[in-house]
Image (cartoon, rainbow, N blue to C red; front, side, top):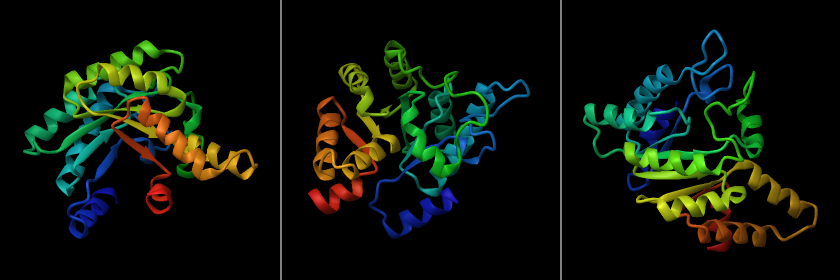
Length: 227
C-alpha cells in the first residue's frame, strides 16, 4: 500500500517532498519495530536487512527521503549501502536518531493497534532518563550517512533537541507526536487555554530549541488557520 501511495503522490504532485516511515511495527502482530525471536528478543541484524529492502522498495516508488524509525543499531549505514547499490543515490535518509521509549505515543498506537503485545521498546528505543545516549545515537547516525536526524517526541525533550542541534552537522527535525497533540486538545477542551495559542506556542518553542523541520499533527491547522 505504501509504495503504491508514494507513486500516486509523485505522479499527481511531482514537486511534493515525500518522506516514508521505515519500520516493521505497523506490519507486525507483536507490535515491535523489529523481528522478534523465539526468546522474545528483538533481532537487530535480521531486522536491519529487512529494513534495507523496505527502503529500496520505497525509493524505487519515488520517495524523496526514507525515514527509519526503528532505532536498530547500524540501520542507517545498511540502508545507505542498499540504496547506493540499487542506484538510488539521490534518495535521502532522515533517521529517527533520538527516539525515546515514550508514553506520548499512546494515541497513535491505539489507532494503529501497534502497541507491543509483550514487554516494551526500551531495549532499542532510548530510556527517557538517558540524555547522553540520545546525543551519541544522533552522532552515530550522522557518521553512518544520515542526511537529516530527528528527535522524538518534541516538547518533553526540548533539552535533548537543543543539545543535538548544537552538535549536529545536518538538519535536525523534531516530531510533535500524537500524545502531545492530544494533550493540547484535551487542555483546550477543558477550558485551560485557546487551542490555536497552545499550538502556536508549542511549535514556536520547538523551533526555538533548535528544530530545522517540525513534524506535527497540527500542520493542516497551521496552514489553514494561522498562516
